[in-house]
Image (cartoon, rainbow, N blue to C red; front, top):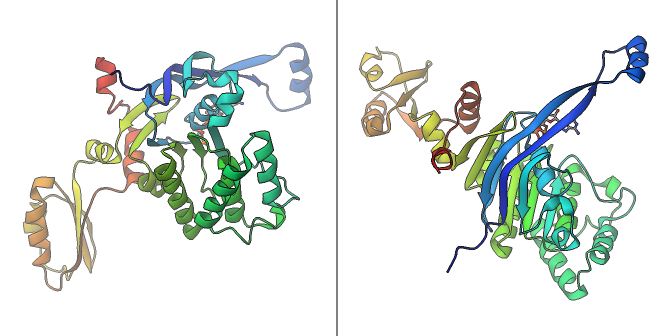
Amino acid sequence: MSAPEPAIVLDGLSKRFRVNQRDPGLRSAIAALFRREYVEVDAVRELSFCIDAGERVGFLGPNGAGKTTTLKMLAGLLHPTGGRAQVLGHVPARREPEFLRRVALVMGQKRQLSWDLPALDTFELNRVVYEVERGTYDARLAEMRELLDIDAVVRKPVRTLSLGERMKCELVAALLHGPEVLFLDEPTIGMDVAMQLAMREFVREYNRRHGATIVLTSHYMEDVAALCDRILVIDEGRLRFDGSIDALVRRIRPLRRVSVRAAVSEALDVLDALGERVEAQVGSVAYDVHPDRVPEAVAALLALPGARDLRVRDAPLEEVMRELFSRNERLGLDEEEGG
Ligand SMILES: Nc1ncnc2c1ncn2[C@@H]1O[C@H](COP(=O)(O)OP(=O)(O)OP(=O)(O)O)[C@@H](O)[C@H]1O
């Protein structure tokens, strides 16, 4: 039996924007009426990868890397200028009704709910637009109201809701038609920690219950670390890494950080032979050590007077990302390049 087609396929997908450019000022405004000057921005450059049905994938990259542009092309809001995309067997830019019924794009910065109406009214409108059968709609709505704890919220005008409450309702509005592919662009932006956790939990549960494919962008690394088994890192429109967070961390920062709180007064020479000292204060010390030497380092640090709170951890994802962007390598793409 042949393997099932991946849910999402990108093959050399590219987007070039043509931007009208002029200097500030009236003189330049008048000149621009007669002679327009354009610059071309390559927002997305020949992206190629596949995502299987049911995967949870994080899309990471610095500001302006091309994440939103890629999601918009995959959701059919922007036409590619090169290459091709396929989502659930559809070409997104054609925006076939069947395609629109099977995907959803939620953008933390944009809203689809009507400001002056209760969210429930927009939900009902979406039910009609997407032709969702009443029984299915009622069941889905009940499930989401319970998971997101929004019973009291859905009857109030949207303008009176907090940002987090509104985002929960945005998510419900986007999911009532039961999309199989969910694109989430910064879904937790501006939320407090409790709300972020609730949102993550909900997305994970939606993926688990319905086997939906999730593609997420977020500047909060914890969102990505908590939700995504696989990350795609893009920078200046190009794919730089495709793999697990663990694999990325091991490639960029192979050493493990071992730290302890202790009375660190005597000479640290013996400890310094273990690895690189990255922190030494009056009450604590930390070393980056090779994984093979972790047991030795743990024993040595625990032997310090008053040792407590020993920790062994990988470098934080933020640090790893910073280091990745300061290098100019393509990582975790060997198979693709070889094949
Ligand atoms: N409509 C547009 N017209 C012209 N240029 C655009 C347009 N949309 C995006 N760009 C440019 O394309 C590049 C990629 O932008 P995009 O919004 O995809 O990045 P991003 O990775 O989502 O960034 P962020 O993390 O800041 O949201 C940027 O240089 C941006 O200025």
